[in-house]
Length: 63
Image 1: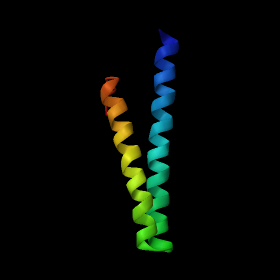
Image 2 (image 1 turned 120 degrees about the horizontal axis):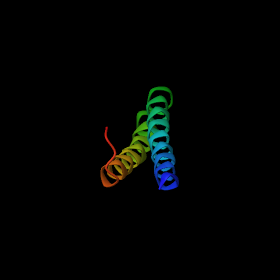
Image 3 (image 1 turned 90 degrees about the vertical axis):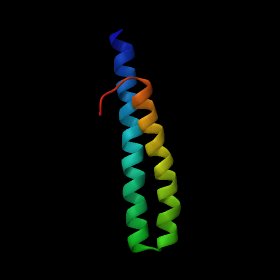
């Protein structure tokens, strides 16, 4: 039972950092390179954020 919980926590952490990292890269690219480059990356970040929130809700994790 503990192994399952730890595996879910590791997976949640991986999804969270993927979302946060891609959002930071998107904001940085939008500010430094071009707004359309940042916009493209932020679309991917929005999907990663949705996937993270959906995972938390499915597994009953609190926010």
